[in-house]
Image 1 (cartoon, one colour):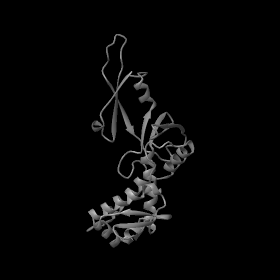
Image 2 (cartoon, rainbow, N blue to C red; image 1 turned 135 degrees about the vertical axis):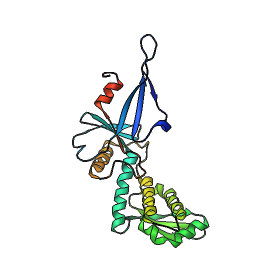
Image 3 (cartoon, rainbow, N blue to C red; image 1 turned 180 degrees about the horizontal axis):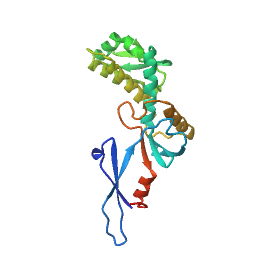
Image 4 (spheres, one colour; image 1 turned 120 degrees about the horizontal axis):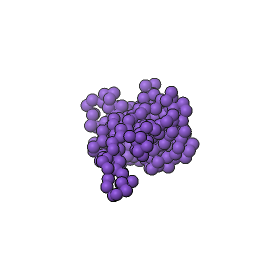
Length: 238
């Protein structure tokens, strides 16, 4: 069986097409058969009865649920969960921080450091406690509780760059985009192998969280392939 797929640039987010081309006994091929794959959101009601099949490409979690194969993008799902938690904390007052045993020292350009030191309350509201560390450096004493230390420096520089770009208008939309950045950097990465327990926990968290149709950047969290699609794919049905 030869499988042909549209190139990524030909695929639109809300509707993807998978085309198959089979080889006949005489060596001729039939015309590609196009079958639609629809995006599906996850809610507690939709997933009250499901079975975790496993992990695909160390990036996607596969579920079987009531005649459907549901594919969850682990990074997009975790990113949405973290963002929702951060946004809820931000509404209360500020993002919950975690103190670092050893500060993370980040080197900045002079103009970047000046921006940071002039906007310390902004960074504090994002769970980042920043101190002057001399010369062109700052020390991060605390980071958002959702983050791993390995992601700190790149995340901080990205937030500083975003803040400087909108320095004259740090409106709520810009602060929200900063939270997107924190969530993206803190989320489980693609290509990370998950244990069965980790997959189960992620699925359960998605089930209990609203607004999980897409990640904060708009990418789908889940795609559903129903039994009919699979039967057409393998030409059990026309």
